[in-house]
Image 1 (cartoon, rainbow, N blue to C red):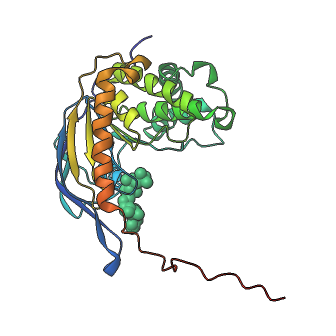
Image 2: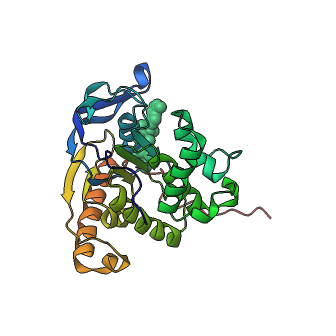
Length: 284
Ligand SMILES: Nc1ncnc2c1ncn2[C@@H]1O[C@H](COP(=O)(O)OP(=O)(O)OP(=O)(O)O)[C@@H](O)[C@H]1O
Ligand SMILES: [Mg+2]
């Protein structure tokens, strides 16, 4: 397969002391606090953390949808000051337009840039081939399975040659088998396009399987509690999931998350039931 034209893609990310405040007035709170990290161009980073710890909030700020209340966010040295096709986002549910064919959905970003029809269709076919959907160019989105829709979504985002691919639990709605296939496919795609990936998940197996590096977050306010570098060889295949090194790191991540979640659990208050309930009285 030819390599799609993505040579200027990989981006460097610098996040300096970023805090993001959400809510209004007395309800306002720091969703994430004092986040500090950098990502090298072309790196595959997973953000792992429990529900509500601020993963989507952080990704929203990297996409430019949310403005941090403190600190600085830069991609390739440029401050992030709004959404841009150079920072493509894939969510759990696709955003394909139901009234456009799969091909036209993938080509849509180029249409917005004013690329002529023949050229945008040529490139859309190229990106559909990259995600294994070349046979489905003429279908409607609702004629695709969930996994295929997410593949079309990835092609739709990658055609803009983003420096940064932001993925928010993109396989969270898929069944286990499709999800495993999509993880392998995503790694194959990434080795071809080499864009920087920030992938949010709360699934430890998924993070360990995909990433060069896992940033583990604590519950509210989200802070980084570990920066874990993985050196499992690539290409990664299903056998990795049962290897001793994988199991060892999985246990480590589980312990980290359990410890943090334990800090968050509310103290259970007694229900106030008497030790011995009164005997039943039956009126005859
Ligand atoms: N617009 C908003 N206004 C107020 N609070 C919000 C808003 N969006 C999210 N929150 C709260 O901010 C916190 C972080 O939310 P966020 O969606 O980033 O978490 P998450 O780690 O992505 O969780 P999940 O794994 O469930 O997707 C949560 O407590 C959430 O309830
Ligand atoms: Mg989320």
